[in-house]
Length: 465
Image 1: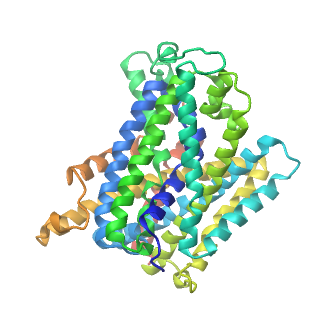
Image 2: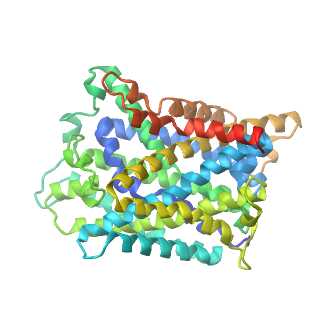
Image 3: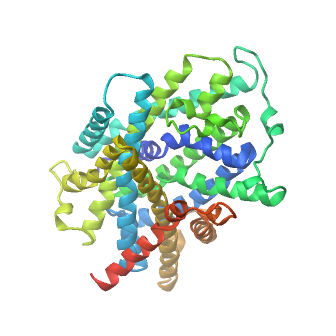
């Protein structure tokens, strides 16, 4: 691979893969689940976990800037079987999300009711996002400028939200903390009164927020293509974390001020701009033209995220091939450094977006997407586990932490905190299904099926390979 990526490319690529429909649309369900204060606290707490992942990953990837670093670290510091399980589960989470973001873009563009079949839009989005990845990595990094549009759109929405809250809308109504008082700062989980109901509602936001932050670690996937990874990667990891935390936490605050958590439009399931809490707030203020503009922002976000998922999934798969955990043909690169076979192979699961043309098949596809989120959490968990072993290896060989190219703050305590937090999130991911009168086989399987798949992948390497 060619080492042509600079720090600004790494930062934009990671932000582009993380700020997608989850920020514009997904935060509405978290507001509905936890209330405005629950939403804010949930995202702040999850932000500390993300910071821990960034610190642990930064120390290892600057020391060993290799292709496919996540599987490599698990293989090197723990066990090849764990590297195999992590790599393939992580690749799945990216590859299936290509189809998910394509599906989202297709639904969003239908907001304008153009007489074009959904299959045409799916084909268009898949083809163009794939073609961007066929060029050299430097070209891909420059095209990441679409991320600038997403960042600008978030900033504009935040400014509009603040203006509306202080009474700058057409009605000049000053909202202030109105919705923190009625219906209240916290939602009660399953109408359980008291601190228990509030805590469970907060915990449900905490787990949902984890999915919103998945993708912040993708900057490490490009370490092998960075011109100076030991200098640019730590700076990119740090800047990406603070920017994303700023966007999500401030968005959570503004949304919680503008929209009551019991607004039925938060869960209308359309997937277009009408279910965005930002649009709900703007409609409440009586501003008519902005929903179309916001829908355009959301469309760009979904498209950009799909392209980023393809890039990241390709690098994960190429890294697996370099570790001899995937077919050798996936090692091949073009003269410009593009792993073409890995790109095409990663695109294949994205074709499942066509399943959404059928209602029953679309429900199945949504189920597959839900599984991918847990794969991302397991990857974070494996990063922390690998770092724990990495630190023990340094201690055994009497290597000083000060000798590392990048030294994360609050280490080694941050790694253990993050490891424990992720373990709890993974175990309690589907806690709501065990509540009285809440049992659902489909919800239970969606929450936990990834665990036996992950363990099965681990066992497959030990027994078969």
